[in-house]
Image: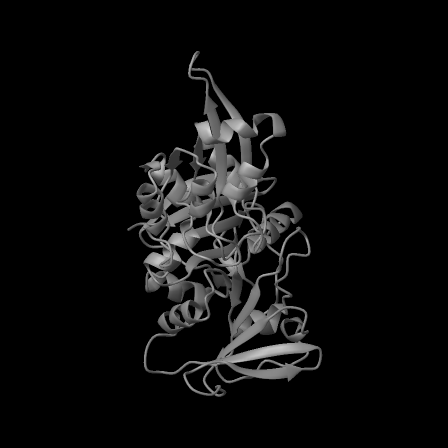
Length: 356
């Protein structure tokens, strides 16, 4: 199962909104008891073959006869429905694989135990819950979305040694080049990236992964009064961009109006004063089927997520050499658990989780 998890990670940044899944096929010699891996696979790219199909397909011709006498390990319950690919449970049954070991159930409503039931109904032995905690952790974005019905929320900011997130009003570059590259890797791992009006106006960020390989996240910006100029990089039309505002809305339920920008498409989603902005953003992203979001600023928006408890991870970059007298104070984390730290030259990156 640990090998399944290693394989699954190879799909990071390429399979969302599907989960990362790894699979291993093991043959046990009935005479010697010696076990041998005869196939491996993982879900490589969204819309393409699932882990189990790639695993079974990787078996060499001389070992094909052993498939029906082997155990298939898979980090997530085999699917039981027709999506972009046929059901993996059917493939396992068709290949006459007698035993399945899976890390955890799939919370996706179209599966959620149905794959296990189908396998057992066909006479397949199914063992569930091997390294379950690790398997759920691997796909924590996927599980949060389908169990809590909201996106997985990652907060990120860079701060000076004296705890300032920005100059006032001038822009200050805080993190070093190595940390900046790491941030672009983080962007590639999330479905969307969110900034507030002030950050968009003063920093004019592109919010892309130009320093890393992978897909650009959907760009989200809060601009309540639609005051941001169309000349900003956010509106260059290169990446899907959604503007949360209190002015413009689409047909039917809130959200959905599309305006064609000079070089692309900008979508508008209306929010109101009826409830908190953070709650509305979370519900909107759930409605838009956006499973995860990286919140990059500014300080007020980040603090709003913290104060309302709408966050799962926080990543704080601190530059030990930089002081910003009179600058804008960084957000303050409450009920945070430090789970790791690393140093990149003069930057220290601390990783936090929200306490349950």
